[in-house]
Image (cartoon, rainbow, N blue to C red; front, side, top):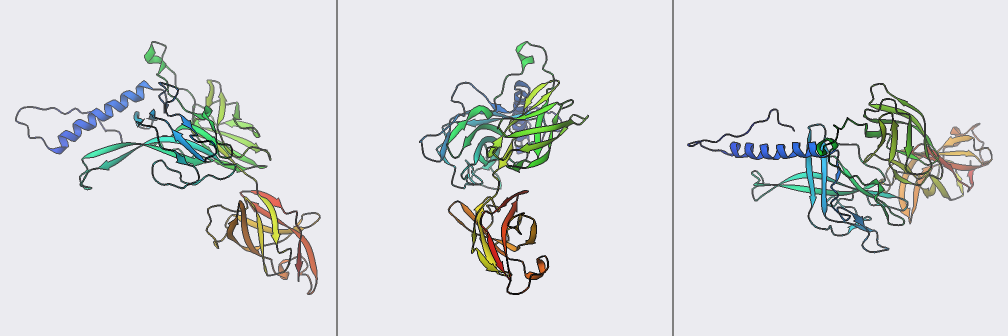
Length: 399
């Protein structure tokens, strides 16, 4: 937190010094330096003294790992008018994108096919010393994290600096999303820098291919915003409406069926100029696809397995309810809904395919309550993340 007031320690002969006095001296020096950094730089970002500063590269072609070079970044905190120095003193050992890690560097969720890894760095403090109750040092850590497809909601206390995006399939590094800092123009003899528009968030943070969602972009000085353009193809924002307060923009975002999966930064056009979203990004999730129905003939009230991609939450444990997944049985010709599946449950993946087990609705839940010893040929529709897919395989339901 910011200090309630600025106070220097005053020493004099005969004074009995306690730990509070020395800590006050340390706190004064730390906060004054952070205030100076806040005034010196214009935003959070990498201090580019050379081409390799905090650069992200792939050390070995074909391996799903990246490396971050040494360098320094600034984490600027507008909430308390201070900024942190974020220092990586030596090149970081290769970071596996397929291995989960809660340590530094962090990979909270391993990457999979079609994913985009967003590499960020931020500042954290860690007490250290032999006595946990009385730490003698505070370690200032540079925390490197690889986020899967989207960034977490912004945290003013821990501003993230984006270093690059990495496409998992090709391991191509896209440094275009990288955030850099500049010296404030007013400190270089120019005219004072006016407060510029800024983007602080977007909600929702993701959508599925082939859907249209209402988005809200938050920030400052967004008055009169006239357009929002996304870096990735296939994302089109329409009906852009800026709130008079300048803190919100509402728009309708259409995600094309062939929009590339992964995170996309965006740019907001305002009368004060165009502003890039920086660490704020919108993620496109692959649409569901049904690849198999097993078995293809089954009695009502019995179990079938639906196999496909993006048909359930990938983090679900085996045999847990597949919450968020809706399975329905539809007319094989018109695809009109006939009945819903009961109790969809997550099964173990088969390679890259997900599996969901579901019970076929009993005869009483079907239109007209089909008579015994009759059958209906249907298709299966899976809805997940507000997007649907219908199987090409047909299912014969016996009653």
